[in-house]
Length: 444
Image (cartoon, rainbow, N blue to C red; front, side, top):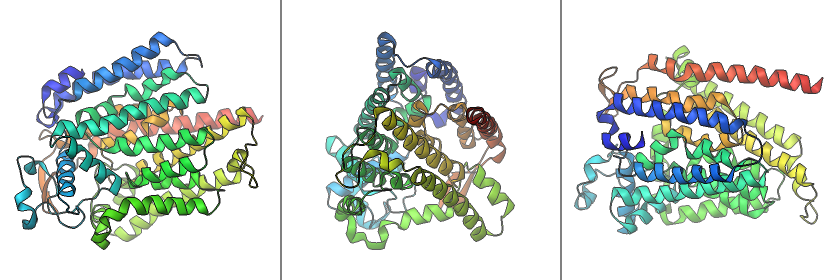
């Protein structure tokens, strides 16, 4: 299926064929993922190396596939930096930058807006352009971080005494395969640093996981919601470390002033697409956008406070070190329980964001896939397949192009969200009540 998808070229030109290939690959994957999830703690070495070998083969097979239009902006912003220009200051359509335009310029989206990306992502764009001013070079940078991510997932699984073959749940998932190897999105950078922070935390690190999660924040801002799990119970100096790391990454771009976040606020306030729970709230309050935002933010904030309080209330951070001398004060069993807890709560936090976010492109859901190696959820696994419905919103069979904010975009098709999200929510509710029953039996 990877070979066939690569042969399509730009998947937007033949979405039905892409959907067939993706679905076949997903069915094969989901059967294997359920099998791996049920296996015991010991791993089969032959199976493990087969998983690793084919995770590499799949990705290199998809590398020549046509990327998304986001990658053209990555290359543009990398080129600007190498020429001493701050991407937060001038949009691509600025006449001041006209002499930098080349054959790749036409592929850039939202040419009237400056960059939305955090500074570490921008620095990686520059690195890619140093290697080569090409699509493959830029893809290679973020594919490199995905290979590092797979390695860290394996290390974390082994550290927890779990079956290393469970890395298949991420490594063979069609969603990351398409999002990174084929389409070339940059989210693998952020996911790598989040999982690295969890791994360093499991290794009983104190400073290192704080630095790693700070780097995740300046890769993609979503990581800020899991940052408190790494700070609760720690001395104030570690908060200073967070600001120091973030500040150091922003330092080369600080001349843009308020322009650092202009495009981020623009997208956050004016765009929504493929949303699920947020769409329900929006539909109930179509004429009250402020109340809609307050309700959505209130629900999300309430969930985060509950998760932070639950983590803090259980005294998880006290398991790791004594306040006086930072020496370990827990058994290996306690360490595993504690690390499971921070992984589970981070999983809930990111999952809640994806449910409530106004914009939910398929590659956003790659953020949750590594957690499925540790938190087995049929609901989230199935969603990584039903997300294929999103692509039909970009097809003339169901949708049409409309002008919005100066761009021609595909009109959102709300009924397509039913096959996309209904199986997910039904399974999620089922898993919730199933876990409640298990908890009741345990307490009994």
